[in-house]
Structures are given as structure tokens and as C-alpha cells.
Length: 133
Image (cartoon, rainbow, N blue to C red; front, side):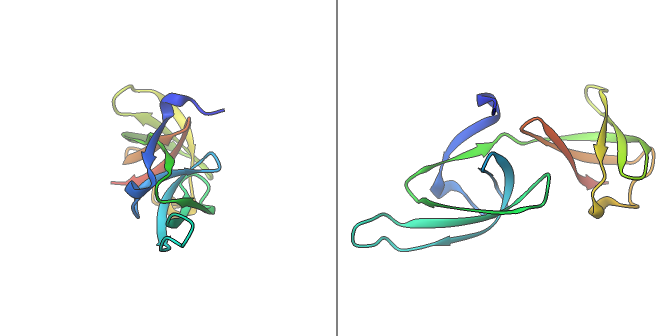
């Protein structure tokens, strides 16, 4: 399922907007956090709403503020576009010179050309474009 090396455990209190969290095994970027006050018989709870970084799906989870949450290990790498097709681009990693195909999301449609520098985000064995320079 998930490589233990690709996931870290972090206190729920350390989760902030813009950081990453694992919800249902999917790496997500946190977009909203709501906390409730502790009740008569229980601890404070927090509702974390996040967007999947690879599929864009909205996910949410509720957990006590004293609990631990799984956080994916995110790697950001610079790469260069080798060629562009309709729905995918061939990318070469700037450090390892590895060449691989990556799907082009709507956000980057029409912005990629051969030779452009891009930033690729990598987590949980998957890759996605995150920025075009």
C-alpha cells in the first residue's frame, strides 16, 4: 500500500493551511481548518478540508487536536519540457536526467513548450506539474 518512508507522522496541531496531509491514502494540500472547543467529555476536534494534489478532489477529515496525522513526503524538482502532446508532456529531470511522461492538467494547458523549465511535485510514487517558469 504505502511505503513507510514516504509518510511521516505529525501532530494534528502542526497542520496549517497550505501544508500537506494524507486523507484516505491521497496526498492533499490543506485549504481550510475549523476547530471546535473541547466539550464536557471530550477533546477539541478539528475538521481539515484539503484538495488532492494529483486529482483535485476535495477531501475532509475530522480528528482530535491531540491525535497524530499522516503527512506525505513531498519532493519538488526542477525539470525541462522535452516535448508536448495533447494531454501529456515528456519531461526531463534536471538532476538525474530521467525522462518521463506527465499528464497536462487544465491549469497548464497551452503554457508548455519544448525547452521550458517546470517544477514537478512528487509524492506517494506519483508526479504532477506544479509550476511553469
